[in-house]
Length: 156
Image (tube, rainbow, N blue to C red):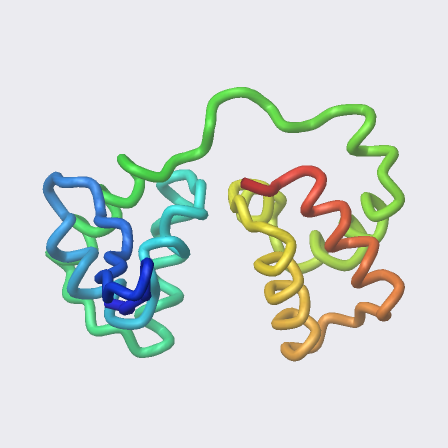
């Protein structure tokens, strides 16, 4: 909880709360220990996407038992799922970064995992930088084109 000054008076700034429902407590206890609610709210994944995401977090050290895993995935999939309707358009495919995205990102990732996220420019820059640190062969020029493309298609 952060404290901000409003007109000289200390005000408590609460982080947005998770929606109520089965699995909210598990999500709070297992996810919010490392991540803010905003990171979870940005994701828009299919059920299988949430399963992959939870399994990845477990591989990285999250302590989640099988019963918690089911409740966690059910909760995440119910509250942050893929929006209905396709996001593809001819204009987006003609974007200067579209080819770099296909060539550099889709060699490792299925399009669903990328297209279901809703990040702002800073979030997409962090994601692309992380992929570069992990070995993605992306030039600085391609990086900017990819980030611009992702922002134009998949921002919140």
